[in-house]
Image (cartoon, rainbow, N blue to C red; front, side, top):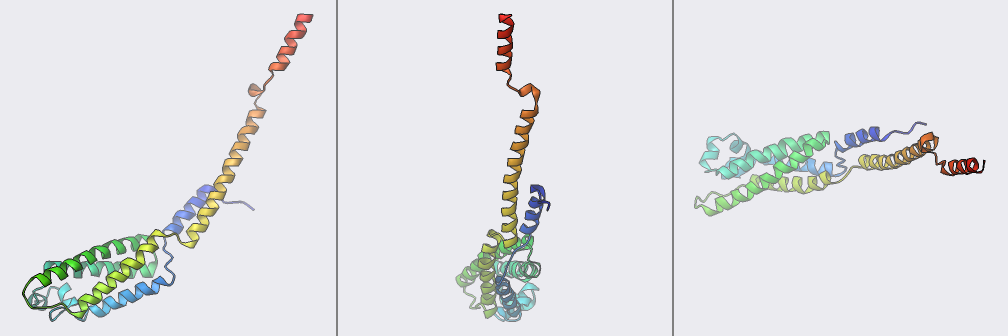
Length: 204
């Protein structure tokens, strides 16, 4: 049976690394997306729902929505609503990483939004939708982070095979090099034979 070489195993390892084995955490992330969808129709700030803030409607303006709250709404839409949904559906590493990065940024703006609204005297408070989006973002950040740092089972198995194959290749190369040295007449140590021949000629 032909053993796979290190090059083919390297390609297989790279292919395995392009996916994220979410396991049961896939459903946790799906729940975070569901929470976000519910939040779309709940009051986000004042009487304006999240979708009204995203659309920058008159209701959002009447609620005196701050720029940080607008940014939080849009970035959470990209991070949780879009990228996390795609990452759960495809389990692709290339989608999981930006989903985590963008959602992490949205958490920063959520805190800034809370601070800014608390610091003004408008008397308009945040609605339950704001906190549900914040909850969804926290779930995504702390669920995806360990996933993108860990190897999936297929990647770990291929990496082990690659290490074993690489070791065998190195042994085989060393053996072939030693064989070539033995077969090369230029590398044969015939100093004793030549010394004996010189001694015989001297006696003659």
